[in-house]
Length: 205
Ligand SMILES: [Mg+2]
Image (cartoon, rainbow, N blue to C red; front, side, top):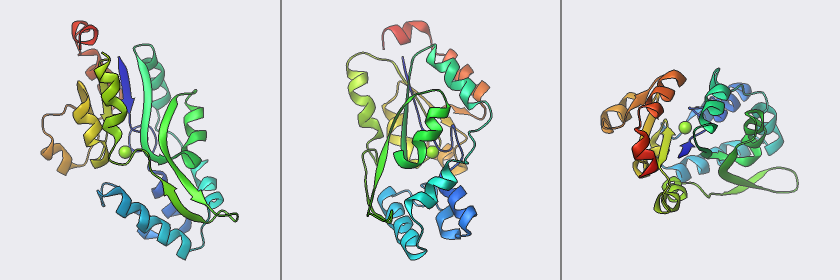
């Protein structure tokens, strides 16, 4: 079994929220929950960062103080005994690698920034945007049972690709739009949802 999970909103708070609060820039509070088109959202963020002269090191300084949600490390530890954990996120490696290391070493599949010699953000290399499902497609094809966990619009393609999708505290609008997906509010409920999958389905997806 593969347990593919989103990062922000599932295991840790939104890093951009922390950056917005730290530097007092309301526009950086917007996430894919507000602007579902990730590229549009990123263009907006990069413009704001450059206008405010915030550089990669300023973002990393905030990211390193972001605290994972209580219980997330234990949930991942529990999950890794049942399957392979993949963290698939629209975050950036430069911000999230240290956080993921603190969980105890999991594979993170995310995007990367491009910067100039002074650390100004000049662009980004998107690997995941709109493509979360493709990371899972081939694993599904070769016979793995896929559990996917996400909280927002950008997780929908991944959840749709999974045998067992789970929404983790999604916004109301998405609960209504995707009323077929099981919803978990806590890590205990996530565990229960994963345990509810019959062993037979996992063995013969
Ligand atoms: Mg998320």
